[in-house]
Length: 116
Image 1 (cartoon, rainbow, N blue to C red):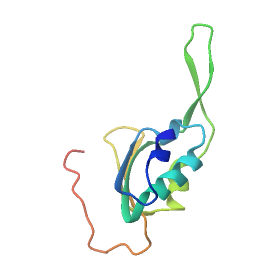
Image 2: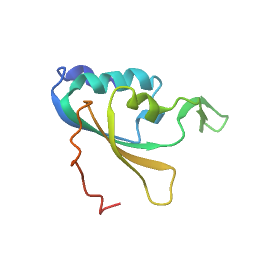
Image 3: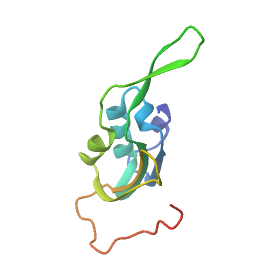
């Protein structure tokens, strides 16, 4: 996600990362970039598949071959952000997670998920 270079450090209040990190070549670098641009006490909303699928090759019909390299995107994010809530998306292998860039999370924080 080369576009992070266009943002100043700690300049974004909330970032949405929807079905992206599990497909990047270097997810740890992208997580570090997210951490850098989100303000203290800011939020990251992550929609993530349980598998990490990265393009590894193209077959003879020019179809992309996807492989799971075993990198746990959600665990890597938890090393930098405080998880506030997670919910599975209906009947799928996708999680919807809310993280905050702090260790001081208010106990009464909540959000609604009626759309899920």
